[in-house]
Image (cartoon, rainbow, N blue to C red):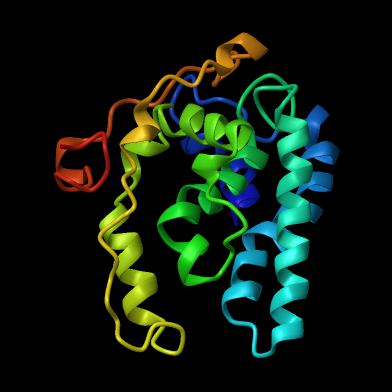
Length: 206
């Protein structure tokens, strides 16, 4: 669906919209997706919904092996592929931004919090602070969805208050690795006031 939006609906994109799926990087993006989707995006779910100890531990090992691989890659470059944000970064962001609030505890993916992993925490902060990323996130809504809907995982439906996510706005220093978020494109306009997450939804909206 994401590729369809980028390729088939391109005529509806705003002027200056960045190319998130450049022809010259497609092979690299899809090669990475063969790691990111099954082992990370879906890997947290395989941990959380495992029906046996063996299945859980296998998914846990595969998740953290994959996270270690992207950590190694991101230690030497600002973005996953090329010198600007691509679909690979968007695919990974959707899981990373939920990791500490949900997956670490709720899905037992708890080797470390991302805030304890300097490279991944810096990368997440970099993306979160980029227009079009953090300004669309509603953490209370995310937590309510997982902790309330997944009764088999959290039968009490109690939603945790934490963690403190104010650190997402701290300096990340990843500009030193080079690159720029939108390449030859331009950032999106600020989120319309009537479409913004409510006050208190994340550190950007106090």
